[in-house]
Length: 257
Image (cartoon, rainbow, N blue to C red):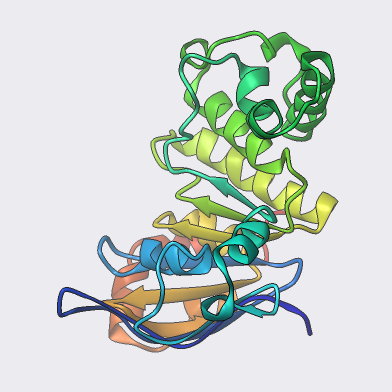
């Protein structure tokens, strides 16, 4: 099996404080892999290691089969171009129109003409169920759910092999959150792009993921399919899932149809 991301016994220490302690997992190609845990558990720290913003104090991080610690800056930069990133709050540029946000990479790093970039932006917006009516809107004119869709379209614009979603349902109402869940799953099924999802949203994690890990104080408590994690006999796991378990168990096969 091909793995897009591999962490082997990764530890991260900052100013004498252990952030991550012996983290090991594999993210299979084409799958949705979710990382759940409370605030300060180490979820975001893992994504910083995956994209090479941090180096592990101990252990190895592999991205697309490459040992990140062995790469030059230029080689690492090339690998990063294969990653799309959806930021927690969308992080759209307030002064740019929607098409400029989606096509930002091409505006900044290529000689493509605006007309061509608009076409690329529209193609990606259609993937997230938006159309030409939003092309010339400003972010301030969008709802929270639309902003998130535009952010996902921007992450898709460069045809990445991996998308990292940082709290994709954060700040959204329950109905819109489930719409975004289905969109993430739909994009994975349509494109086969591997996804790493960092979330505190239990319904999201258990309804879209192929595999889930639960992090606590920088350590993996459990890893498995949504069903395996949901039924893992650990007081901490059952307490963490808490009242959501009845709701999650009632979902057909946990995954959305």
